[in-house]
Image (cartoon, rainbow, N blue to C red; front, top):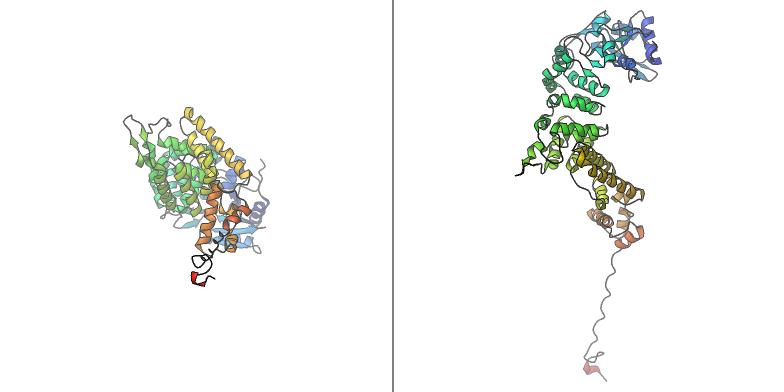
Length: 463
């Protein structure tokens, strides 16, 4: 079968073979080719030792990116290709990298150290496959299976727990029974994995087309780094709006949200404050007063734990904090001012996903209201309405020209004008606003009183 191997990868393989060495594509690029997906990078393994590999590429740009572990990177017409010598690995005392590697001459020995069978397939220049662990069969069956002992694979590198779940969420593959059980059994290894590495895998998992299936099956795994999620799995919601428990509701809202990291994180965390805010009235109805604001604080702490950047934290916590607000159409301009266009429209998506995770028979009216809010906001934007200081028809220079001294008073003046525009007291018209900036004329000084009782001169001076 013909596979679309990039020209650069072909040239790398040809150079190694001409040098008298074995050379194969390996790992994710082979997996993707077999799935009919264009690879985004190309990894190559070879029987050549690192110094032999360097000789094969004498005169070309070579980076010693991982020489200790047998890896060098060759730049071929601007593209980077990692080339690694066949190797076997020692123990992983840090649950991330092997303490040592030893170079081997057998391709099968090299493939045996890899994580999953679908990543342990090698492809030659002619498209021939070396597949000692039946990875092709597992790809065709849509199955994720560890190479060798699943417990050993996950203990070697704890991130493989998250990688397995991410592959399942993105590819829609099932996890082989022993591999799935080993994920549950070895989930505690995630405590030894750097937060940044978990962050990257979690984001890719959440935006996968099958994220909901994985969240349903593995809340215990996510609970290793975010234990705040676990109370949702036992949270009953005895309200007219809810027909599912806290975790199933959360999962359904994640599924209903667009595949955007900010939105999916928000839906995963939007009800995180509910377990701590639950109360039940005399009729047996549950209430969760104050859960959005508490949830926003908890979400910020959780996002900091995984080293999320400031912008992500700011947007997610704002959306969690506001997900329960009721926005009448007459207040759309003020909410656009408060949140900005990007966050406002994301809030509508959050509220829509939240509604779709509730009782369907009661959600129809809410979804119609959200459609109306969207239409109102889009119409206001199309009209060029003013929502922020940036949109105001006058600026700081105009305030200074009106005689107000530089400093905080300039901002206060502009915000006062913006407030009147948002309230509809003033149009966003430059001439009208400039008129507001002009100082009121000083009252005319009163004429001095006429001297004397006759109104002109003192009596003694009258003629």
